[in-house]
Amino acid sequence: MAADDRFARGAGEPGEEEPSGTRSEIIAGPVSDWATDFSHLEPEWSADPYTIQDDLRQRCPIARTERFGGAWLPTRYEDIAAIAYDTERFSSRSIILSNFRSAQELAPIGGSPPISSDPPFHHDARKLLLPAFTKKAVERQEPATRAFCHSLIDSFEGRSVVDAAAEYAQHIPVRVIADMLGFPPEDGPQFREFVEDLLEGINLPPDDRVERVSRLFNYLLAQVHDHLDKPRDDLTTYLIDAELYGRKLDPSHVSGTMALLLIAGIDTTWSAIGASLWHLATTPGDLERLVADPGLLASAVEEFLRAYAPVTMARLVKRDMHWHGVDMKAEDWILLSFPAANRDPAQFDRASEVVIDRQVNRHAAFGLGIHRCVGSHLARMELRVALEVWLERIPAFTLDNLGAVTWSAGQIRGPRTLPLRIA
Image 1: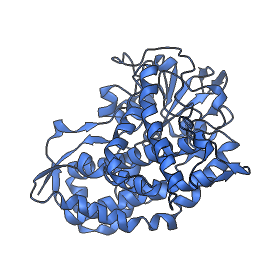
Image 2 (image 1 turned 180 degrees about the vertical axis):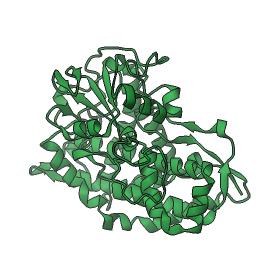
Image 3 (image 1 turned 135 degrees about the vertical axis):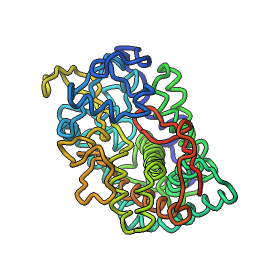
């Protein structure tokens, strides 16, 4: 297959980031009251969202803000779950809360199917991806992932302080996803820029945001053309050749799904790895237990996912309605904080504590409802292997400088810098 008219130069960019009008340009600035003026972009939220969420859960479980053109923040597990499962009243066509919404005409497909898709299209778009993320398929990725983790730690030889986020956690999912999509591994630094542009650049003016997001889709288009010229056994070629409803996928579907796999498959996982290492560096008792009893790692991985769930997703209200005591308007944002759901004491015993041998742990780190993460097996494998290799090679470490630790802002939370002292 040397060419494909579907992918003529310039085609295939989704409309996810096309402005459809704004209701407010207010985004950044000090929060006056988290119950009526919340913002997940502020430093206080980035540093410690849990204290804020716990307070809201007690006094205003569904917070409101006029920023972003109007948004709601439920903090109870039952409310978050109810919205996640309710596709009749809440749309997934825009999942990144920003100062503008994607056009209503994009539903039910959205710009990055299946995560941006509503029923009935969602089911079929998701089904296309399932074979690549089964437990058996993920097992084939484990040896290479483990070898790569060892190579990263090999590079630390002779050093007493390393940045476990920038020099370890952030490299692992980049390599795994690049291999799965058939992208050059040396393009990793670009992937990190794409993540920042898409997930942390929501405070930019719409035109600037569109320009930055275009960088990602220009890159993806170039990769599509390379795969058209040189097909190989990877996810990109699979998507190019896949059929839905008896015809090949639309170019915007292919590029949107590639963007989803690239962005969602990277930042979520490196955030989980980094947060887990941060916990162990700051909780020596748990570190000692895991080193002494590696059999605890399976339950510890699930507990790290619960306690430090990295992902918050957005929905849009489909129509005006009174819902669980508040008056929602059509096109209001809903910010679904799975981290808040995971720390709800009505759902979890000792919810605010990290209990690495927790036996019952039905957490929501991978989401709830039809959009539960299709790559959960892959993420678990990467997190488990990253911690296994680290603890095997570096069983003793501490936080080198608390003030130097930084956390990402926005809907994916994890350490961006994490200086650790190796004993």
